[in-house]
Length: 267
Length: 270
Image 1 (tube, rainbow over the protein chains, first blue to last red):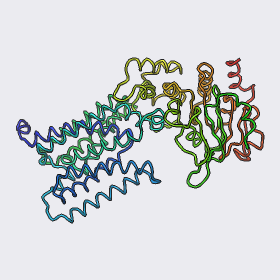
Image 2 (image 1 turned 45 degrees about the vertical axis):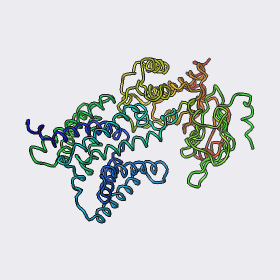
Image 3 (image 1 turned 90 degrees about the vertical axis):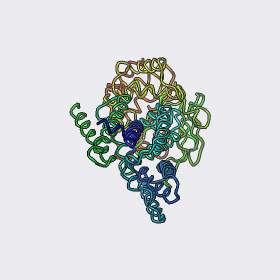
Image 4 (image 1 turned 45 degrees about the horizontal axis):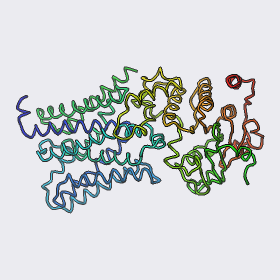
C-alpha cells in the first residue's frame, strides 16, 4: 500500500484527483440543480475538437481544448436564450460539430504523438507535474469563482425569473457558470477522460440530492462522494490494472445507487 | 377610443399606465390596443382565459417584454431595472423545484441578495429582517423547514415574504391561487388585503378564476387579447362582456354577499 504513494505519477494522479473532486463536486451541485446534465456532456465532447486541433498545430491540447469548450458552452447558452430552438437541440448541434471537426483535424495531421485515446477515456500515467500545476491553478480559479458568486448562482438556479426581477445579472451569471463548467471539463479530461467526465459532472450532486435537504449539506456530501470515487477509483485501478477514468465512474455510480435507495427508504 | 371608466379614477396616482399597447408573438397579435392603469393602494385583478395574454401583459408591465406598439409607464417612467426593483414578483407556482435543498428562511433571504450585494454573505441582521418578513405572513414558525415540504398556500406566503424583501410598492402575482385549497386561498387574499390596507402596497394579480378576482380585487380588467372591461368589479360581467372574454358556454357561479368567503371578507373590513 505504501509504494503506491511513492511513485511520482501516482502522487500526481492523487493530487490531481483530489483537486478535481472538489471542482467537479461543486460544479455538479449546480449542474444537477439547474438540470444542465446534457450541457455537461456536450461541452465535454466539444473539448475533443480542441484536443485534435492542438495535436494538428503542435501546441498544447489543453489550450485549444479550453478555447473549444468555453466557446461551445457559451454558444449553447446564447442560442438557448435567443434562438427558436431549445437548449438541448443546440447542444446536439454543437456536440456533433465539435466532434466532426476533431475527426477532420486528426485526419489532417500526420503525426500521432498525442495520445487521443488517453484524452477520451483518461490515463493516470499521463499526468505530469506541468498538468498538475494547470489543474491546480484553473481548479483553484473555478472554486474561488463559485465561492465569490455562490449566493447569486444559487438564486438563479432556484428561480431564474424572480432572480432577474429582483436585480440579479442573470445573463452574466449564466455565461459565467457555463465558462466555469467548460474549464472544469478541460482540466478533468486527462485523468477521467472526455467521454467519462460528464458522469462526474452529474453523479456527485445527484447522489447528494437523494440524501440531503439543505444546500450546505448537499455540497459537503457531493464533495465527499467525489473524493471517495476518485481516490478509491485510483487505488482500485492501480492494483487491478483497470482504466482509471472508468473505475472512478463505476465507483461513483455504485455510490449513487446506494444513495438513491437510502433516499427512497427515508420517504 | 379611451374607455370612459378609466377616466373616473384619473385623479389617483397610476403606478402602471399602458397606452395603446400591442404585442405580437410569432406573427400573431396576443395583445391588441391595451389601455390599462393600476392605481396606488388598490388590488387590480386581470381575468381572462388561458392564452388570453395575461402573463404577456405582466411581462410588458415589468419591462421583460417590449411591446411592438404603444407606451408603458411603470411608476411614471419606462420600465427598467430601477422600476423592477420596486416590484415584488410571484410567478406561477411551479412544482419542478420541490426537491431544491433550501429552507424557508433561505428562500426569503434570496429576496435580500440584491441589497446584500456581491461578495457578501447574509449576516445576522439580514436573517432578522427575513424572520420579520416571515412573521408578517405568519410563517415564522416554519423558517427552518425545507421549502419543498410546505403546502401550496404556505409556499405562496413564503414567496410573498421574499417579494416583500425588496420593500416593493407593487406586487405582481401570476395565477397566485393555482393548486391552493379554498380555505388557504381565502387566507392568502386576506393577507393581500392586509398588505394593501396596512402598508399601502398595491397588487396586480392575474387569474383565470373569475370568482377569485371579482371577490378580492378593487378593480378588474377582463382580457382576451383585447381588454373588454376595465373598472369596478360590481358592474362587471354583463352577458356580452363575459361572452367576448370566455365564450358562450360560460357558467358564472355568482359570488354574492351571502356566500361564505365574501361574508368573511366583509366582516374583516367593516
